[in-house]
Structure formats: structure tokens, C-alpha cells
Image 1 (cartoon, rainbow, N blue to C red):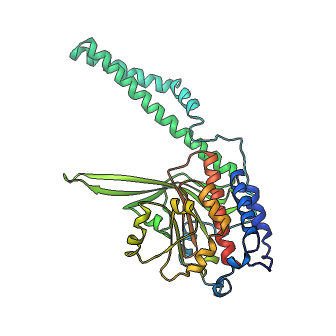
Image 2 (image 1 turned 135 degrees about the vertical axis):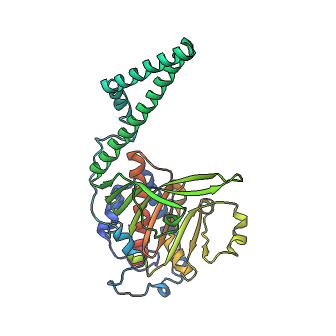
Image 3 (image 1 turned 90 degrees about the horizontal axis):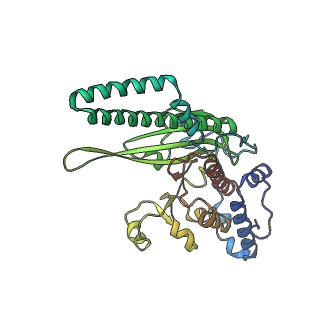
Length: 365
């Protein structure tokens, strides 16, 4: 990337830049290369406004940023971006369904499964026939066999998912927690709902070289209808959590969220907000995202984060529904839904590393 200040060469960060470029998917790399050429053609004068005046204040490294203790207590590594190349083994199940057929066939041939199923089916036939005739007895047998198939399928599906998640953790050198666990409520997404939990967590150096936690996160919202009946809505996300303490003094709060609602209402909505809206000179980015910073954060610093190459990547190459929140040095990147394939999880972690690197580089420049 060309030097945005014109004359001076940026400081070298060998282990950071080299590693992410190695791990980027080809489409990410194309976006960065294209945007780099665009930046080199820009006039240096358009990049210098406010740069010298907005250097982050110096702070003691011994003072942890807000949220650091909660992240550490939850087991989120403090390493942030690393120069390590995560272990990657592609000779594993590639998604949570890969081994489902194998387990399904094994269960159908299991003597205990067959014995229990046919025993219950014969009892249903006898009871149904004696009580209501042979037709009802045959129907009862059909119901028993259908229920047995559904149960066997559910068990096979669960075992296949266990195979995949265990193999993914081992193949990437991560520590897996397969039971429900909590995530630290360090950003707005992790504080939403009436109930919150992670169904799967993977901790260590994630694909892309980011030390953090990958999780399948869910929050629940409970409502009551006019009859007083309670209903629960489940909102599922795949998230990456990491610590970037170097950003805490540069910008306190930054949220890049998926656009919701009509753009022409932005001004009206902002009248009721306490946060500041960040507007970028990119139509494509504006259609996909809304960007906000804290009430007391510096708008110029926020705009410096969104370099031309980063805007191009967000608008054109990143996952269509990616979003992220940075609060007090805690970064949470998210996409809707639980991703359950190696390709999706790898690409998402690599995208989180791109975001973390951009925030790190600007905060430490």
C-alpha cells in the first residue's frame, strides 16, 4: 500500500503483513492489490489532513483496557495478531454432515436398534389390531418405524457434527469446548437478548493468524402474544472474539453493522442517537453498512481506519453480511447463522484477521 502521507515510509511489521497475505483467500488478495493501485494514484495531499494532530495519546502498558479481564476470564487469548502459521489439516470431514450417512447406516444395522424397534412395532401391531382392527395395527407399525427412523437420523446427525467439530479443532490446533458456555458481554451483540450462550467454541491461533476464540453464538428473545403464551426467538451468529488492547486509546467504540432500514431515514434516526455516524465516500459500502463511533471518539481517527483498500474489501470482497464491534480493545466479528463447514469457518476467521490487522495497524502507526 502506498504511504498515505507521501514522503515517509511506514514502519515495517514483518510478522503481521507476511502472515495474513499468506492466509488470505484469492478473492481477498485481489481486492487488496486492486485498492493498493488506486491508493498509489491518489494525491498525497488528500490523505494528510489531521494525521499529525490525531496521534493516539501515550498510555501505560500496565493498565488493561476495559473488558480485558472479562475476555481473559473467558479464556480468550491475549495475543491478538500473531506471526504464527496455524496448523491446517484438510484430511478431515469438511462439514458437519460429511459422516452422517456412515453413522445412519451403522445405526440401522445395529442389533440393539433393530431389536428395540421391531419389539415395539410388534407390540403396536398386536394392540392396534385387537383394539381397532388390522388396518389400525398396520398403521401403528408404520408410525413406530417412522419414529425410529427420525430418532436414528437425529443421533447420526449429532455424531457426524461431533466428528467434524473434533476433527476441525484437532486439524487447526485449537482447543474445543463442545458444551454450552458463556461469552463475556464486552460488546452490544454479546449483551443482547434474554438468554445468551455459545454452543461451540474453539480457542487458539485461528486461521489467518489471529489469536482468539471462534464460537457458534446464540441469543434468545422471549415475547408473549395476546393470549399470554410465551414465544422464544433464536438469533444465531458465528463470531470471533479477540483482544486488541492497543486500539483502546485510539478509538473507544467502533461498530460496523449490517444496514437495516432505509438510507433516507439516517438523519432522522441520528437525531435520537448518542453515538456518531461515520459517513464514507463509497456508495457500495454505504448500501451494505452503517458505521458508528462513540460520542467522545474522534471522527478523523475513525475515517483514517477506513482506507481505500479496506473500504473496497468491505464493500466488494468480504462476506456479504459480515459486521464487527470494537469496544475498549475487545473486537467481536460476526456473521449471521452457525457456520458448519471447514471452508466457511476458515474464510470467516481469515476475514476477522483482516479486520483486526487494519485496526491494529492504524492504532499503532
